Image 1 (cartoon, rainbow, N blue to C red):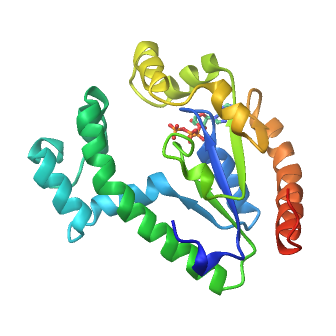
Image 2 (image 1 turned 90 degrees about the vertical axis):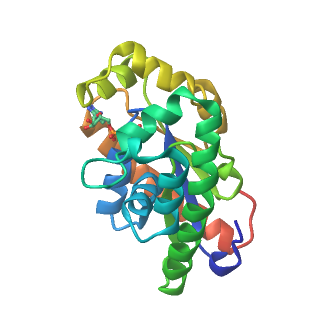
Length: 217
Ligand code: ATP
């Protein structure tokens, strides 16, 4: 990603495993008035834009079987198809990644132009797609694998086995923690997570200042 249009922004990658609490943490940061770009949501928007190039390409490559009865891309159907085939996953990534990257860059430029100092990029597969190289700081939302499975199951109709298979396709908990500049420990209650967000924001402000002063973090 070409960062020249938003080089003064302190860019934060927010990531974590399946059901770890990324969206919950992202919402807390947004409530604290930090701009959050949710790349999963963005990919979803690209797929629901029936006039867009990404939608047309997905229908061309995956057929009408991944559409719902209104002709919209059904994310669950598409996820099931690509989950079963590495080749198809690569095809979808090739369609979506450049489109997501372009839109992310456009939004970051707008944030920088409006004088924002810090921007949060919520990216579930930050490490897996190598976007950790683009950001100034990697924040990992962490919880034990058993909680990930439980939380995922509580809001989907998937089994523990299906949740574990999804997790096996992601970076391991250790890989994420090894790469983290800041860890949000989400092993306990929501209040416990809320209490850590204040510390995170203070750390991000320090990071921004260090970047402005040209210091190495
Ligand atoms: P996904 O990988 O599916 O996108 P995610 O990492 O964004 O998930 P969330 O959607 O934030 O995770 O959380 C998963 C589920 O766990 C949600 O139903 C959320 O309300 C719940 N949850 C998050 N944090 C906690 C917590 N500390 N205690 C109990 N439930 C939680």
